[in-house]
Length: 620
Picture 1 (spheres, one colour):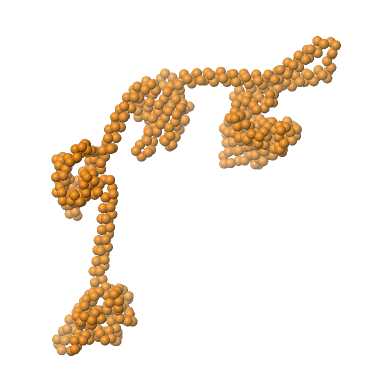
Picture 2 (spheres, one colour; picture 1 turned 45 degrees about the vertical axis):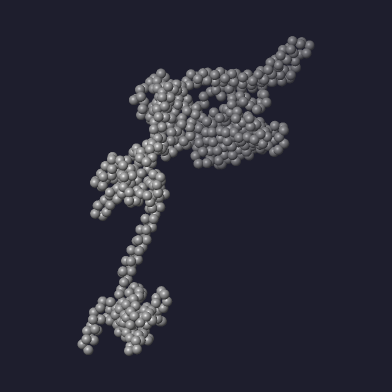
């Protein structure tokens, strides 16, 4: 009895569950305190599967086999893993040790079990397995990356023996990656200088980097000298001990040869530019000079030291500075060359007109780094062109005036000759009414001459503004209600349609703008001839948009031929018949509109109509 009590005490002292199960009905016959603490008190007849799993039937299947059935079948101890649940539903993984208890006939009547909680161990195993899987994935990822890069990569031990090389490293030496592991780097590539570098990295633990280092293959002398960027990185353990070296090598032979060729090309370019007659210079986007040839030195009368770093804008005529800056910015933004750009440059010998051709110079990233400019002095050509233009303008002016004055003067001459002939014929005295009519015609032609001269004077006169504030709608209404236009609209059966927003205020010279609008409206009226059989209409609109006013005079008259459209603002150009227009109306209108900081443009379709658009700023 005392011995039995010792067994009971020993079972109670265990820190893991210990229990006895009746194989006949799976009821628990004995359980120690640890079992009760984990799974709670059980009142008989409570089955093992109900207490530990919360089930109503015995465990079964491959996922959760019953240890009792295995012990009964094998009649020997069995060890299995099971997931049990506490009375609060917490899963616990147990390693169950099941031992049979036999009767006299060797039949299993009870199972003695004890369970070891391996939950934390399983978690640790799972975590280690996942870490191992992740490490394998990372290793595989890095190996794939290293084997697909063009950079040659090798891993060596501290004695410089190859442990691993990537595909690029092996291909560079016409070998397979499996050839290298175990071989010594300097047995394959003997080089005392490089060996000292490797030893220094091992000794100091500091990485080494080399750029464009020359190299010759011992086994392939036919390859000649090649150039390589390479690095040697020490791999250290947690206790700072060097465990190996990572060697990376990048073939930069093409780059070095390109640099050599570029240098030779630059020398050749420099020689060519130095003997060039036109000045050649390079500037950055700010306009600072980075290169200039001899012709440039001579033009600016500066030395090399004084010109390099000097801003070219310093020499540009004040009236051209903004334009020159915008050209530089435009090239920097669009990367497009500019040809035939002319501006004024101030140098010791005076102000010179320079014609530039400018091209962008791109860096390795494709961005504009500098601008190369070649300039030719065209001052004499410009002056010659100005003189020719002056002569052409005088000729055009004379032709225009002669053309316009010729008709009324010819008419006056005919009338005077007629009157003189009648005065000489005493037998046919001139009646008073006839005389008055002929003198009236003379006056009419003389007034036309005066009008032509007045328009000519106005065209040539500098425009001076007397600005005031007025309502646009009122001014347009006054214009179309004038006696002249009312008569014109009536005689030609023209419908005028004004659609002008109320209270649009203009600050400008009311008299001059009235004249501009009058000239445009007169052209619209004159565009209607007898051949037009459709309803004749002139549509005038005016709207305010943001900081501007847009005015349109649109008619459905004869329109303007495409080849004539570009000439409508030329002085003395007109499509009207002789005696019906000087060709100065639109020229004068444009001068007035532009003086108000506005714009005017004409669009037209021949035989369909014309539209004149005026854009005026709200604030002058």
